[in-house]
Amino acid sequence: MGAAANSNHEEESSPLIPAAAAAADEKPPQAPAPAPEAAKCYADGVPVVMGEPVSAHAFGGLPRESWNSGILSCLGRNDEFCSSDVEVCLLGTVAPCVLYGSNVERLAAGQGTFANSCLPYTGLYMLGNSLFGWNCLAPWFSHPTRTAIRRRYNLEGNFEAFTRQCGCCGSLVEDEERREHLEAVCDLATHYLCHPCALCQEGRELRRRVPHPGFNNGHSVFVMMPPMEQTMGRGM
Image 1 (cartoon, rainbow, N blue to C red):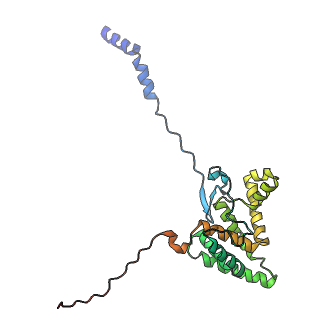
Image 2: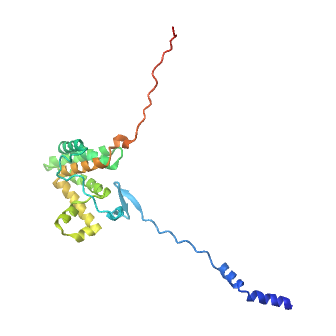
Image 3: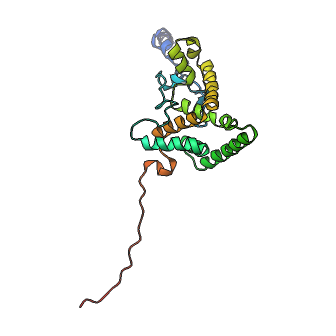
């Protein structure tokens, strides 16, 4: 009995027993739950996060770029795209519906977008000229393309360029939401006041950035030619 009591007393007085019990009661730490990722989607090829268009901060804080050519640079620039710029100028003057359909086709990079854009534009162009005597309906239809180009390539808008030159309204430029609303209004005004020039500027910008979808995005195409008909003859 004395030995059993001594063994129980040694177990109770052992410093390892409370540590082992405490270690058994402790639970392994759980990893923190990952933060929910913001919902991302695309609207007209423009990345959208939580319903708002991606701002310049999504590009790593880089400032917005300038357009490759000015809106009044009808013949474009003297570079490797000079012949394409002349074609864009002719299309914008003679057939703006074709130029608009080509711009949307390059921007969307999908099949059937040319006809889906060119035909409605043509109808609005003819309706506006027949009812009001000028092309006042097609610019309302085509100005969202300018907004999509500006957002996708992080280009400087007309309002921001105006404030940079005049040095005013700096608080509006810093507020991304208000600036984007004003830029969208400026896009609409640009298409109404300088519609052919706006289409040409967008066409020059897209041709320098996006290859035509009909060119297969530069991938090589291998064509298998069937063997020529061969005849067997007996040697002399």
